[in-house]
Image 1 (cartoon, rainbow, N blue to C red):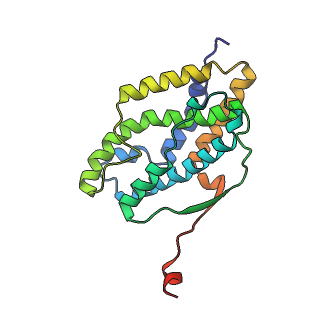
Image 2 (image 1 turned 120 degrees about the vertical axis):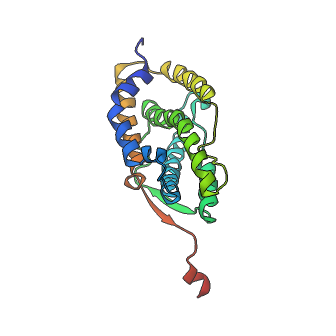
Image 3 (image 1 turned 90 degrees about the horizontal axis):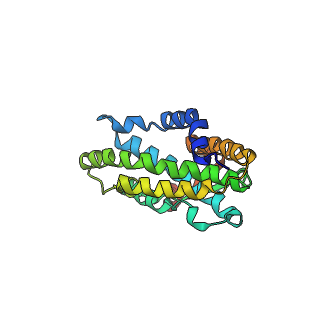
Length: 208
């Protein structure tokens, strides 16, 4: 097909993209009044979302024609960043409500499009987090690390080229678009897709 899958995804999900940024308070990161508590809550939401993303991808590995198109697993980076803030390990147990939600190649590509696209915005956020962390007195960010924006752009272009070759019909593209919209919702509200619970022992259980 001559129609670019990623261009169609970008055009068709603008509203969902903007809504997700709003719900996750992404723009507030650029405010001087942004707090460490807000940053912690933002990272925790991202951690939950990335847990689900990797679960869906791993569940559907057999569908993928090329493992190189899979976004990097960022869960450990998020866990370390959260630990740097409160000195507590994140230990969540979760049950996904519908594990088959992204069970086709176009649906899985729609999910991965959202993850890969967020890396570009992450490089801009990383510069602001670096400014904040100096006043917060925490270690350098792992998730929002300062990767060269030019390198991210090159990586993004290559990724788009690889997945655009996989779209073979209008039906394929539409299925990927519908899936990407769901993926944005996953980042906005991961609790909608899974039941989470903290499995760290409570203080009362330790002292009983």
